[in-house]
Image: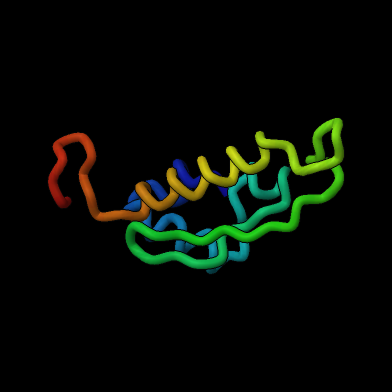
Length: 91
């Protein structure tokens, strides 16, 4: 599923809701094994259990995994909100 092609007529919240309803995840979530599990306007929840493949050389979860999870959560929360960030007003 390509969100920009298949769901282009929907707002961000509804695009993400369609992914959840179709039991699909963004490709980065598939790669790093985390998933979008809750969605409200302006709020999302991801969950994941990092495997050894995302451990750093000293045996703990790599900071890049955490940063990617944070980036996905923040980006999707903004994408699902009803704020028009271009003009700073509600859509």
